[in-house]
Amino acid sequence: MAENEEINVEDDIRRLWEAEPFVPFMIVANSGDRFEVTQPIQLAMGGNTVVVVHPRRGTSLIRKNQITAVTVLEPAE
Image 1 (cartoon, rainbow, N blue to C red):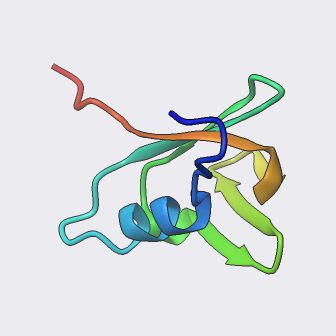
Image 2: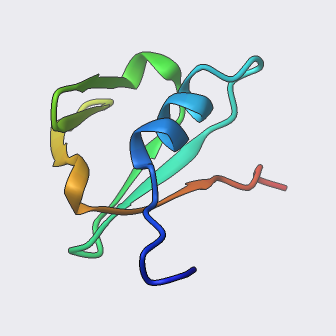
């Protein structure tokens, strides 16, 4: 990627979040933390923050400027 090219994380997340049919994906933060989104209901976005709800574990708040990648999860074989 060119140095001045910016990743539009919000567009990438929104595209995956709204996909029909939904495909699970992972959000990767610059800290190395990874957040799996396996159902659309687990995610909320606002201003500068993405919220991921983890079943039985609570929630994670991630600042959009701390997201380094958004990747589609491969289906389990």
